[in-house]
Image (tube, rainbow, N blue to C red; front, side, top):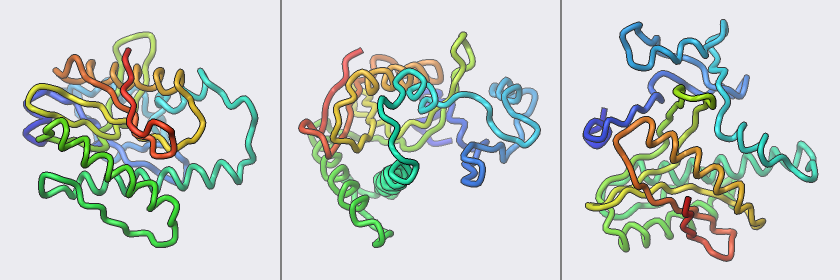
Length: 219
């Protein structure tokens, strides 16, 4: 566990699971011991080792279903573009070795995704400079098993300055989905607060396709 995770008791469960593209779900890859604080997760693992909790994406889709059903082909193209863009952004964070992020492109076949990711990394560097960020945590996985609403989610990016924590959520849409983004931010905030000692977190949506590319969400 990293020093910052340990210091703030961030209960990242990503070491136990791996995403399986064949079944589009997370599968258990490391056993969870009975004495482990995450043992209750085993009650949500089926016979095929799949995690059967709702994800934040599932809950958002239930709360805010598509008004018009786009074709499956269009959805697949959008999901692939967004997936690649987010992977490029997170890779830039993970590979960070200096004060600022260096954009690393590794997929020349998806120029739109590359341009989106490059724009977000540029905005992140401005954000890092403005808020004097000195710690970053990317792509952690958290679960909420302590209420009537049990779910899990991947946290794109957490940034920390000397005085504040920032939750960064990446979106790539021209359409304004303010209520949906606020609902997702509330769920992510709940996951973080229930799985760490982080409180009073500030939340920002980074969306290079929006008129306001960096927007704070107040809950």
